[in-house]
Length: 366
Ligand code: F6R
Image (cartoon, rainbow, N blue to C red):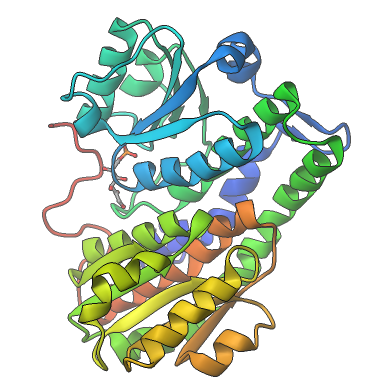
């Protein structure tokens, strides 16, 4: 059942090239330059007339929502707010029939997300679900939706659900951008072509596994980790930190790289490993200067870089390469080594990778 892998988590990490392909299969028709998603087409008016999109989710799905915020605003020019479902439902939110709510949930059973949906519906909002489990409570409770088609995710730490959620949300953003005319047809085609290349590129990113394992061996006994990223990769930093916390029980924090100097920089010394996402597309020079600040305080730098990078290589203690892509799609690649890093560290520490303590696959209590 684990398909020859030692753990479900590792199997699911390695399934990502095919899971992402399954997510866009039949939906992305690049020859015709068409994105076909029934749930979106049937409700196009609601999406196009929306004053804003409110995304509600928890945990890793919330991180996917943060990535989507960048994509929707960047491409479709629709204002987006991303909310923890648990906060949204209890703070008397201002919401009405002109709002579109997107609820993201792998299991489709998360109690807080389900309650947030019911609240939004009671205020007249249109609610769209992005779920993995077919026929789940959230899939049934939403007005329309799009499944991720990632296949069953058994490992408690979410991996392929995250990348396939981002894939679905990217397709939706591109479809809306095209309908709104906020993207040129050449830019739109370019995005479709790049998205089609992602499964192969994820495969290439997975080739870093052996090297990531050597990095894991060096830092497995660290008591704290920092993860830094900017723009599209800020949510990836949050997700990397969450992955490490939940399965290795090492304290980790994700931060927007530029926020480091507003506090966390005080933590940096020679015992602090800092994972910095520094791909070529997206504020590269700014991140390089953040790396210089870390280096001058003797922090240990693990850079996630674009293949062929020289500048970060000269500064960092380790660099892990991912293939080049357009900025909006970098999270689908930069996430991969962070999943592998947490997996190897947890394994080396003798933790139960697939069933970490205190955690359940679906949080059905609030
Ligand atoms: C992280 C993780 C949790 C879930 C969260 C939401 O690896 O598994 O943070 O992402 O409980 O779950 P879903 O997506 O099922 O609503």
